[in-house]
Image 1 (cartoon, rainbow, N blue to C red):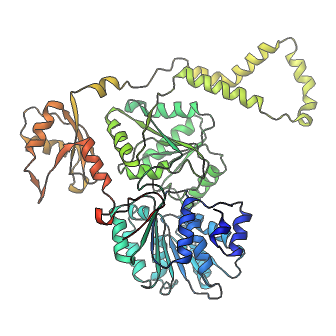
Image 2 (image 1 turned 90 degrees about the vertical axis):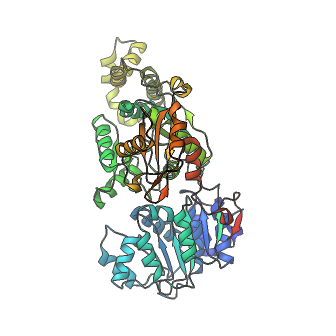
Image 3 (image 1 turned 30 degrees about the horizontal axis):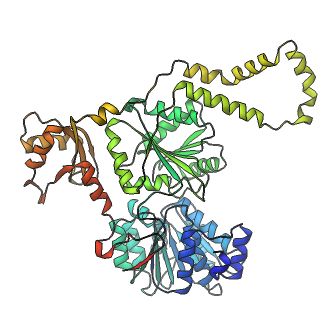
Length: 554
């Protein structure tokens, strides 16, 4: 199918053709005809980078009335970057639509300028929730008569704490509007929005629910925790042309890793919430122009980054919420290209790999951290290929060649090559000469029957810490010499290890135990985690989990 077959306005079609697009992506092929020819609300599940902006943007541009200066469509996005990206994309689609104005509203920019742009007339407003709510409180934007409301990256807006802002914004919009909700994953909070603000919506899924992008290959490396940074450098050195986002959990860790990489001579920088907007813009401009090879970022800061040719996503640490892994890995393998999502884990985190595999429906490849010799070999061949493919600027160097030939007179071809390689390569040879193998063997660990990984349905929400939950389990179970190790406390649950022989007695000891009015459950982690994380969608009677490109009414 081509865009022409979708019966798009000729002016929009002309813009699409000028942009070099001919064939719609799957989400566009499904969503555009639906929005053009039907009137119901829509919930669309599709990953970042699959063409969602065009899917909702093209029909809205075609449907709004340029002759009216009233705001007819409101598009909400979680971050400034995504807000600007959506605005740029819509502006490109609407370049031949005379009189149509698209205005972005976001924090970190002059609100007075944005107020003037809105006052001049804006049929389509693209906004972040915080700045939009500010504008509404100032009565500078009127959304009381909009026909379209789009919630893009809805799951991420909820994860970032915008639920109250969204409720406040949506409460001032007309009941007659069409609501379009786009999300990469389906969480329980999305159901709440659907029930509260949508009328009998249709659901369209491109790809199975909560699964990883098709073009992404998933790998994991196992090292001791103390060797994590060394492993990161080995990976970067093994892929000389790497163009990657490195994800860390906290702002402090993000800055520390970026500073360490810069100190060690890598083209890297950080992106996190403590940066000012000019600093963020500077970093992103350098990254998009590939003056930076590696961007070290937090999950929140990386939202809205639109780079189609990333080679790698590196999870320096896995996120506490496994659904974030889907967002991270989906940033590579875009626009038909392939990418690699790498996870660096230590021994006690192996179980998380199995949990992610169950959630995304894909297997991870266990990969060895390259040895020093392997890194040097890869770098050497890359250097030789770079030399072979270097374009010779004959006119520019011609004047210098006689002197150079004179300097090299008496040195044979083989020795010149050896000296050239050494001059360019000595740093790697020196660094990796005595580099140890930092891989951790899994056979003993995985084959051992001495340790059991367990789940308990209590975590941060009950204000537990690793230390306090360990104390609680030991004291409540009354099992002699109970050993609780490798505790991971998450938002609503925790995981820990104990001796295999103590697992069954511990589970039995909590069969009838309550905590603050609810039953405490302890189960083996590999079974329970899949249940807990796999039921984040609708109930069976109202489930979104249907085949690719199939619609389900609910």
